[in-house]
Amino acid sequence: MAIKTDALIVGAGPCGLFQVFELGLLGIHAELVDTLPAVGGQCSWLYPDKPIYDIPAVPVCTGQGLVDALMKQIEPFGAGFHLGEEVVEVKPEEGHFHVKTSAGKEFHARTVFIAAGVGSFQPRHLRLEGIDALEEKTLHYRVREPGRFRGQNLVILGGGDSALDWALALAPEARSLTLVHRSDEFRAAPASVAALRELVAAGKARMIEFGTATAFKADGDQLQALTIKQADGTVHELLADHAFVFFGMSPKLGPIAEWGLEIHRKHLQVDVSTFQTSIPGIYAVGDICDYPGKKKLILSGFHEAALAAFAAKAFLEPDKKVHLQYTTTSPLMQKRLGVAEEG
Image (tube, rainbow, N blue to C red; front, side, top):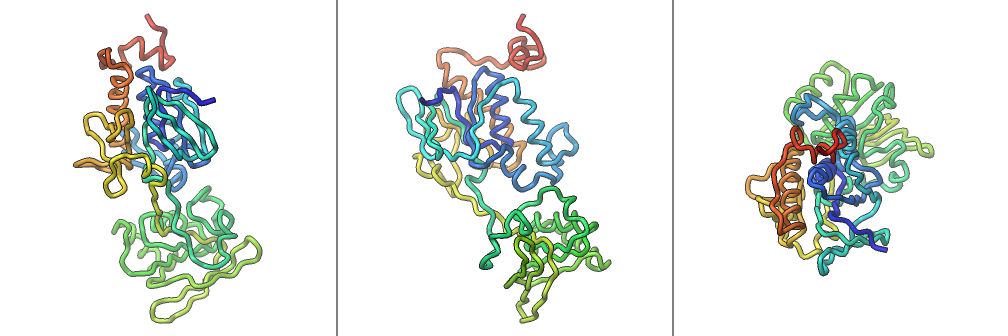
């Protein structure tokens, strides 16, 4: 039996979670589908411990902390979560959209919200034969529980913000830490590069430029060493209890590209007054949508989710005027939030 819902949200990252909140305030129930096995999107997958400083009224929080707070905020609305599933088909039918997932689940959704970030994404892997067997053991494409790496020999591969940020965070308590980059030009913030060079000058870290990993040694699941070859032919044998690979992500729209939506440079085109896509009843918020002046910020995605919710309310109830109400004064909204009874 198909699950019937007013709104189906594709993506359970911060924007998808906040979309639940904005819809819930307007009395619209939502179900969420995400390919990842847990909520949070990139914040949980890539940056769970990385500090975020630009959430309004929150001076600082971690990526996971933001996700946890959003989950707490949407509790009153009873959204359904369908994780570890990919939406493979969205087909308009009379009065609803017929949606199928990779797990064979079906939905009849009156509206669809795409909050899929950059789409289905995977980290770019280290290309060494046999090293994939160490993934999530001693080879990592994200950092979980950084405390477990204290006193270890660490090697970080990459030259972007993630590589530099984690090098700076892990170096002070590591036995040794070496950052290897294929160039001498970094994609990270200049201040981070300068800070790492200071650690290198102080003997607290090492940096190898124009370097590429060419081989590894391991004992079962335990990484032991990485062989690094520089462009001039110099070879380094680095002790490595753990290796971290930050070569960036490879985003793919996946099945979204087949849904008949207007797409430009892998982004969904939207009407900025409603965040509706080229198909009425389908909305897009967050990094996956594009429009003139678009800024890829969580803050922007929250704004987009609010406007999309109001547009969906008008779409679902075309004969009714959608009134703007405030949570501080609206008895109805306070009842939906579970903080007051309707007067």
